[in-house]
Image (cartoon, rainbow, N blue to C red):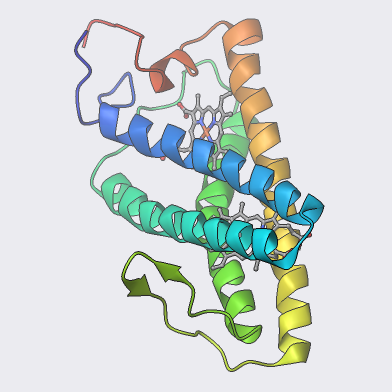
Amino acid sequence: MSIPLRNTTSRYGLVSQGFHWLIVALILFQYTWAWRIDQAEGIRVRFELVTQHKTIGMVVLGLAILRVLWRLFNRPPPLPEAMRAWERVAARAGHWGLYLLIFAVPLSGWMYSSAAGYADFWWGPVSFPSLVEPSETLEDSLHLVHQALAISLGVLALIHALAALRHHFINKDDVLRRMLPSWQNKD
Ligand code: HEM
Ligand code: HEM
């Protein structure tokens, strides 16, 4: 099985696929952790889980930066000819919305943690700078912003996933397959 590293005119390459599915997996992990934080009893357990949530969130932010850089020099395969104009607009808007949110969600979390006075969390020997001065009012607002953006990301990702499944099972085109490593084509 050989998958090209770069995107071709008919499929996503290994690097784009790797970014896509790794970020999907980490985001799913983030929602699970947010739920576990909510359920956690005991300050120490909670602290550990929040630290892990922040660390993984910062990894998502780093991957999002690399992913956009890769995307700038690597055009995605064109959408299938059969798609109507409104479907193309919706697909593009959805993709750009998702790109925006994989930055906005971790950034809002980082700002929220800064306002709460806990931005100096650790990740190995690295610590992250505080983005805003600690303030209780700001902390409350940024918590709501982080929550609202995380919900928006979840909703948009769900619509996006349903659209991908619709392409596969109803339109019976290659849109889902070309984002999967196992698919072989003539390229
Ligand atoms: C893709 C990345 C992320 C996702 C999907 C995500 C998602 C969430 C969700 C769903 C919640 C629960 C909202 C609530 O409190 O009701 C939450 C809480 C939180 N997030 Fe994130 N987050 C991400 C990244 C980050 C980052 C990078 C930080 C900080 C550096 C962060 C800090 C927090 C904190 C401190 C809480 C509150 C935990 C508590 O209840 O004490 N998040 N996040
Ligand atoms: C947190 C979850 C997700 C995020 C943030 C996300 C993000 C994205 C983004 C930004 C793109 C556009 C890539 C580009 O052309 O530059 C994309 C494409 C794609 N995604 Fe997702 N995605 C998520 C979940 C899923 C899931 C669960 C599925 C499958 C059920 C899926 C299937 C696809 C497919 C098939 C494409 C290619 C669309 C095309 O060929 O135009 N995604 N995704």
